[in-house]
Amino acid sequence: MPDTPRVLAVQNGANGGPGRFGEWLDAAGVAVDVVTAFDGSALPARLEHDGLLVLGGGYLPDDDDRAPWLPATRALVEQALARSAPFFGICLGGQMLASVGGGKVQGDAGAPEHGSTSITMRAEAADDVVFGGLPAAVPAIENHIDAVTALPPGAVWLAETERCPYQAFRLGDRAWGVQFHPEVGPERIRKWDVEHTRRRGLDVDELYAAAVTDDPLSRAAWGEVAFRFAALVKEERPRRRG
Image (tube, rainbow, N blue to C red):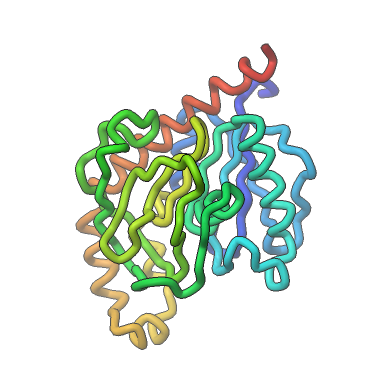
């Protein structure tokens, strides 16, 4: 339907699709148009969608030599910020929001996080339109060694872990970045490289079992976040036309 609110989703890796976050948006009445930028699919020069979703990938936000589509992605993030269009960045996408906004991102920074991880909500999240009212701690799957090391000026710090403090933040009124993966369920862990995971001192079967145990709370909380974000996207179309 032509009047359906639409989000542009930038996919940065073969296994990095919008997953259940995209399913939740769709269930809330928001269509998700995925551009598989990692395989050479062209990104639009101008953000015409009602919102923007930038997904994860094994790159730093300015890793342009390895991922030549990143400059175009950053340009879309800048447009979303300038237009106050709803934006949600996951892992690399969250790091990109921090970088574009004037924060800092470092490779192999601090302690890595892998598997289901408890994300602690900060007091600042209480009145946030997307994160407000969530449980004090919510599990989410993590799989990163790079991290945001300084938030952009004016950003609101929403969630943290001991190993990686900047787990979620808001920049302005309508842009959010997260380090964790709300779009991922336990089944994704089954796709991880077993030997690579073992070399990190971890066991894929144990990580999977823990994620299955944590999934009911994870699914409920992050599904609510997706529905709240969808509500903002649905508000954007009449706001733009007005």
